Image (cartoon, rainbow, N blue to C red):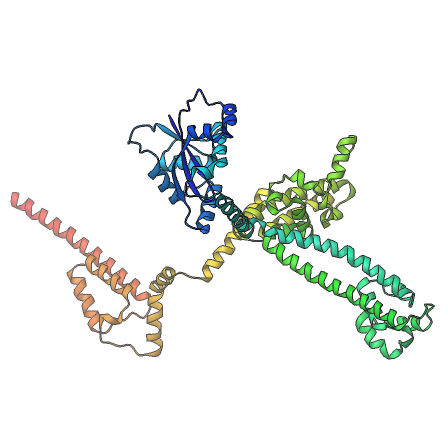
Length: 553
């Protein structure tokens, strides 16, 4: 059986034929030894066809298709044109060797060409890659390297740019920056306190908050110039008039030393820098909350934005977090304690990053482990929903949060919680109801047509009754379409006498019906007429029978 080899290079597709290779002689070690020598390798492998790519964009599209295991139309046409044709109902006397097994399975499904990918084929393709420039005639020595470099750059850029699953990278960067800012703000605020305490040491005990302290230090500047005139401005900063008066009185009897104007300017500049960092931290937190609601709304609704972002950051991505079982998620962030416990054969940790959730803090000491295990279970469900749901919704996260609250009540008060199956059914129903509400807001044309046909009688009859006097023309054009159809059916069912009666009533001016009661009356009349006709027919039959009997006698 002949062996053809498909080689995907950066400049195009190459098809090679391996001569004189039997199944018995497929020894990978012998092939490895003969690959380096082009004279020996060229006798065994020869090029059959080469299909160059039209442009760099075409090369990128073909490379993406090969990496995903898909056969493009260009590749299919190239194979059908270059490989020997197989008659219908007969097996092919050749096979196609490839480096990608997924691509081989797709080629076999579409074209029925037998494909194989093993160590022997990979070794031969390695030799083809080594001597590829010498097999293709018009290819210059440096062209293949340039094509590989350009394709690798464009392929990498496309992967980084269009990878949808890496959107959560923004959450990872934001939470890391948020933690770094918290540490830096604390360090800088302590430095402001230390620095300004040389001038005004009593202010530390009066103002505890770091942000407020930096604001007050910038406003006061020189304590000797602080007077009662500035109490109103201090009250706006501090938010308490008594505290503002206390600051003014403490400045009058302060034990701090005087600072030069240059030192005070540096202190003010540094205090302003701390204030800017605090404001930037607030904006970053708002950005993180908004991003978490877009990426992981259920996880954020269940455990909070900050803790959920820390879990995603520690796992690496939302997809990795969704792959984690609840037991791994429970101790995520406590790896050192876990391995230390395994090494020393001690107690393993009960919780990691999940400990920062308010649920575990609210649980009693004996129930903290249980609560952590239950919360980790719900977090794994929420992360999988966020990762694999098409539409983003917070309904499941809110229902899972209700379950955690019920579990807390169960541990404290003994109130039995709802079953998970019932809660999930209720969540699915609420999501479906929201979808139907969205559909109702945008009504389709079909529904509007149906509604119009049903309400035609009321819409057209009422304004004629209220605004205009009844017209006695008897025209059929004044009547609605639905009434016309019903009248036609009644005419078909009724006999000639009933038809004459209806025509007379229309001619007298009763063609327009005022209410729906008119229709009911007509139906009753028709039924009575039909009953009378049946009775008349029965009597006629009886009379005929009697007359026959008399004739016989």
